[in-house]
Length: 301
Image 1: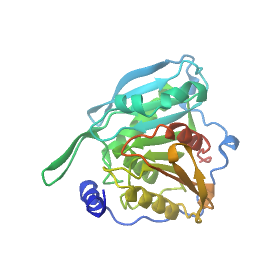
Image 2: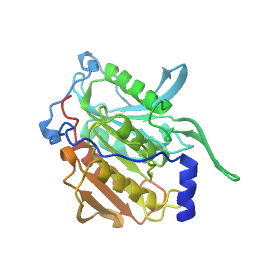
Image 3: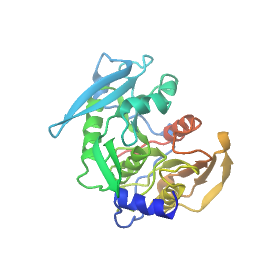
Image 4: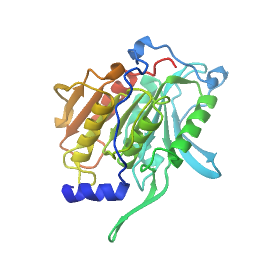
């Protein structure tokens, strides 16, 4: 969408005032290979339930929420492994993104657990056009029902599975991509890095507790969320993470081009990937996203 579409998104999703720069004195996220695992309470368990599609529920504030887990058979009890949250778009489900994003093909080899949560009802209207269905609250950072759900789910998974608490990540598509930004702004102490796809940016009062590594994917042919929204997200994170100018273009598969901003506060990086595709998850993005995420870990608290 062009200018009118961007204005529609602003109305649809609710803009909030200004982003701010991350503190320069935040802890430095060392190279992930140098950061030791931080085993969760679940690492004390002697058994491990595995399964490629474990359907579960959790009660959060009196509301039942659903999610799907992918726990590869290759994992061992007591082995701290990364955890990836993958958030679906509005009107879709955890089962849908489980089938589309492709992380389950990587999980056995890369040894990580993925959780695919279901959103709760949301509705946005403009004129006669309404977007409604399961999705994520993205207009606020404070008092956000879905941040509360995500943290409750994260706490449960850290109790039930052997999670490396230094390597918890978030990705998501469309509305779920927006929500990964919300998590990075609100709880940079729990999420090591994020990788939104096909999402955009609201001018949240984003003041994370540390510089956050971010990788963004977006299509120039996107007719739902204009590519200008993704470019705003890139520019916002460069400012928040106090990055220097972006580096040289790095060509990737399917005509996608990625630009990396280095020289960011505390050793973070911001990577922006853009290609000639519409509002969909690009097939070449999944492995690139995982390589980015796994290269970042939370510094010691």
